Image 1 (cartoon, rainbow, N blue to C red):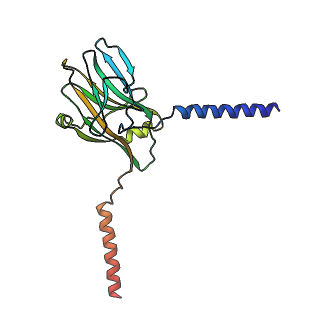
Image 2 (tube, rainbow, N blue to C red):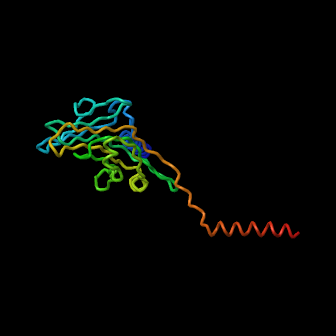
Image 3 (cartoon, helix red, strand yellow):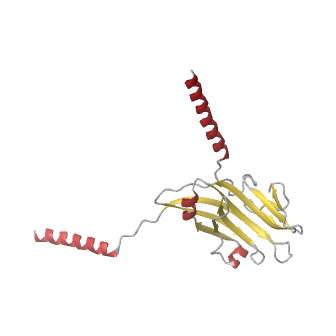
Length: 215
């Protein structure tokens, strides 16, 4: 009887741990902001460098604007650094596959803005705008970045996607808009057949045809 009770306690313990871990495991969500800022959080830093976490659905520094439910980050005279971010569990990828992140972004690079994907400790991050020009950011542009290496190293872990707008010239009229964020798994490009192999194959086919003609 005691052994049975111990087994039941162990079973319930394992079940409890599984339920707790499942409750905290979240996939990336609401990348098109069709549900407002559901799944997203805000962080604002004032001129005294005090950091505050806010709900972007209720903060005046974050808005959903037209067209197409774009998320908009703004500044004011009190807060000079504002970040919209989401913490989620990074999908794992199997061998032979790669992963991309895509999104649309528009902002004022003359002041300061960034888009990053980082691990939970902030020690490893991907600069998602490293290949994007200032002129493209000013007019609005679609961005696609290969994050295969990041997914291979941090698949199954909690990571953070963050978009930040910060002021450097005391002009608080700057805005940062972002929309249509997606993560996509795609098959890796097949390794092309070397030209030498193609020549060998062609030669073998020619020999076969020639032999048949001789017969």
